[in-house]
Image 1 (tube, rainbow, N blue to C red):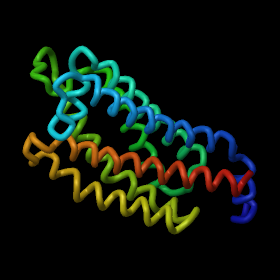
Image 2: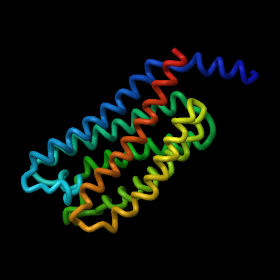
Image 3: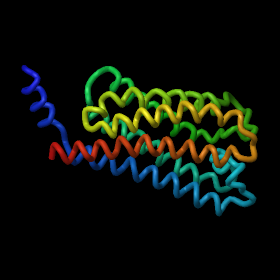
Image 4: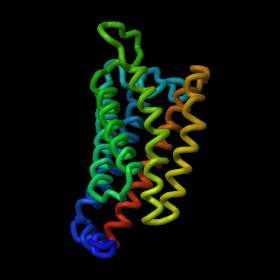
Length: 213
């Protein structure tokens, strides 16, 4: 089979509606997560949104509010990974990148359901900090790994993923050295970078779906 026949076969097997719906689900999960944080900011008593992290919101009486959002974000990552696997833009870099997104979905889900959050919980094996480290490393690599495939759809998508990777790589390490008085707002800034990553992929996937519909 020559390249033209392969490209025609590949396109005929893609399901544009599936790509669109998974992309919409990814965006919806991000919106739910952001909304849950805003709601918790007002509901949780004595909360300082500049100083308190999302983990602080996820501990205590109203933990279910943020837990719902965290699980929704895990769903966003899973939907993105499934869509990336379906439209697979070729090469081992894309494969490793989408596996990374799938692992991030698992990590975020574990963070949301294990309820460890670093709130002096020392019963059993406390893995919260290790999950955070793993999440940070994968967020550094996955956008860059997937940028090569994204360039096939449009240069803006490839450039955007490279930019996300660079900005995250520069920004994320500072979180661990910030004073506790401002680490809450900085964590939200990092969350926006993660949202941008999924937003770029969702936009790319819907654009590709329109082309093959």
